[in-house]
Length: 574
Image 1 (tube, rainbow, N blue to C red):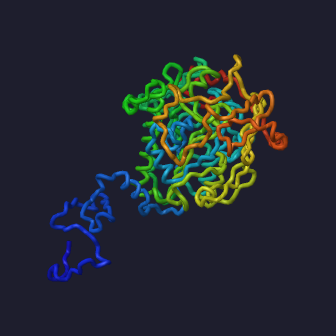
Image 2: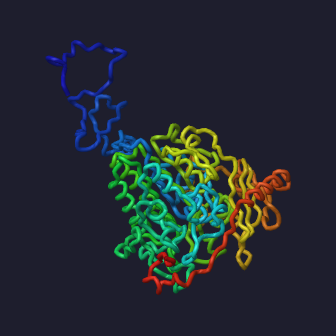
Image 3: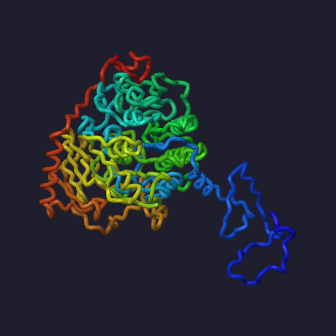
């Protein structure tokens, strides 16, 4: 510390001066060194205005957060866009929704420092959601609304559709994809690097083993094959590496190697926490399982561990952006592709399944109830004008395409179902969206529409035994109040199911109507009270049906058999 010229003299002190700074005597105070050329220093200026004690080592989380909004090293004025897609993550499987059995500190921090999107919807299953993300259109308009693409099906996302990475490449972005594709692969031109991605590291199928990258669930033996690709080259050398960690490593590599004179679009489409295979559905290294000794139910404990690995991935991505100096000009979206697939899925479709939880929502993946459609989502960015809040505005997965195109400096597109929602998310303005077409599926006889606060469901799929996913499912092992986090801003407020008035819904007999704003857990079917609303919404569904393409699932093509394709899941029609 440099003293005034000459030396400090106590005779000049003014006792009890109102403007004096109160500080400790440097001769007696404990000082903690700061060398800012080696590492960031942090000071608590209120308690330590003279910056004696560098508390960076004690407050690493605070240092990480503050460095994440440090002056950028990037040169592009267009924001980098990172989209992290979880696969089958349940509403109740992140702590920021108020239940911390699955503890997710990194996802929670992203959400709390950004905007929690509690009115955000996807489609009910994987392929329909991903088609909507890539096209900005409802999957009824691409013929992908029914169920999911199966391995060896000779169909996919129509090639005449210009998709998200193609739009962003035109805007000057470098585009990379890592993880799950699930939009068709029977011809090479349908695969990611032929549809706008500069690179692809991942798998074409809807699922895979987390270690050997071979799909064995829900598939005939002759089609079981290896499915991990770097661009168009199969990469067996990664067998044995855990998928969540491998995909994260590859994503960090893209972040580190990118030249930020051009903006980056990175689509990290995780396998986690989707089930792996029939004989070992929930796969995760023991080090993650060991974090949850308090969870008694083995399946739920292992599932929480898969989510923990996913959460670590989010934290590592954020850290990579910070260390690269790119965070200040980046937005990060984290979301699930549909509701969680817990044990209730096994009752309808059979094994395998995971132990996801959508509590307190009704339904789960594959249903048109909220548990299948209303998904975990948050957006983080220093570019947000209003952050650290929860939005309940109505958004849909198809909204990202027009939103990202706007942020990339592109012109608005016609003939989309998605809306530009950036001003709504960033400024807290009302969403431009007033309705969502959830489903038109003549194959399963399911129709669902959201309009303002109302949601209509007509029809509900059941298996041969008559079981359907249409009720409320507590977490496996039971709901435990000790995991409730009091006053969580992101928690969904529903009535206590034990005391709530429940008005039955049998959507196979007659359409059901719910006021989702007042009744987010879909306890009360108010169809008989609001016949007028039911009639107008059914008419709206009929109007949407005039533009719906038929969804025609196809049998596996024998030419896709593993024995004819070098043991690979690969394009077979060339």
